[in-house]
Length: 172
Image 1 (cartoon, rainbow, N blue to C red):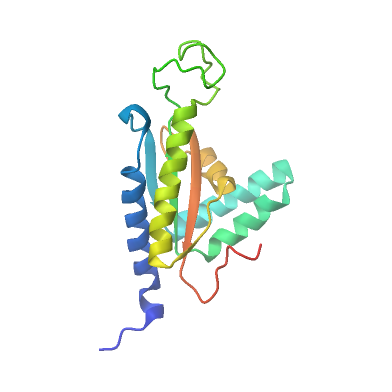
Image 2: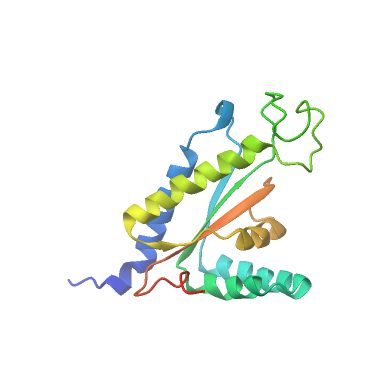
């Protein structure tokens, strides 16, 4: 039996995405508090996210939103990494407020978003090691958050994963 690379692209991309989620989950976290929300969107869900991003473009008229809505359609899957905005209780004042209790819920906790960044870095390092094409997209995270795909998630970033002859996320 001959297995051609084209026949296993989707399966391979999905396996890499699963490993990316594992790397994100095990990334360091402030005070050991795990506020991460992790998931993978497959083809049907990517189409839904793309349509939502086009709706956001219609509202905001920012060209990159339209570009990214088309761009993600070239991905075999989409890694979604988000977090809940939960203060650590350190009362560090890094957010600009003296205590975690004084911080309004609409103001991000530095450590929650920092942990999100560490998780993203861990995930894309796995993708790099696997030699798959990716790009971190906050715009796609906006659509995911608007659709409430990642339950109980305040901030989300998305990483489309592609295996093709040329990185579809590079020349933008």
